[in-house]
Image 1 (cartoon, rainbow, N blue to C red):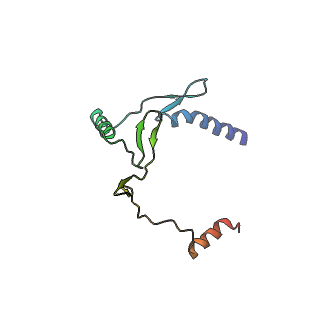
Image 2 (cartoon, rainbow, N blue to C red):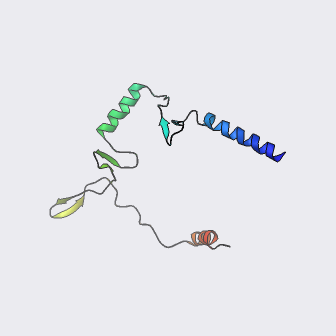
Image 3 (spheres, rainbow, N blue to C red):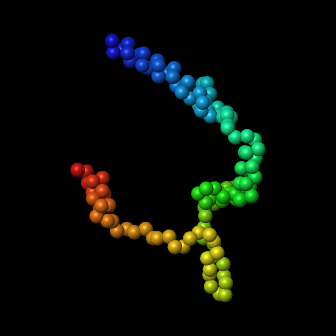
Length: 121
């Protein structure tokens, strides 16, 4: 009876895989090592997509601060910007310098949690 149940479960699993991935943006290519990518339906209109593209081209900065410069360089991380004024370097970028430095000292609660995780007991 267990062999029969195992075969039934395997056959359901094998036949369910194509149905589970029906809405994904890629499908297996029959007999080949790879995928076939296709366009997914969208809820945005063409005008909304073009507006987003226009806004990105005007200011090519992602939400995480990385800037798209194109070419082989592609994306560059945010950096501090400085300039010389009156013989001194001054920060002119928009990244804040007043963020707190990370502390290497653990509180008692952090130490207890660390011991629980890594002591092996």
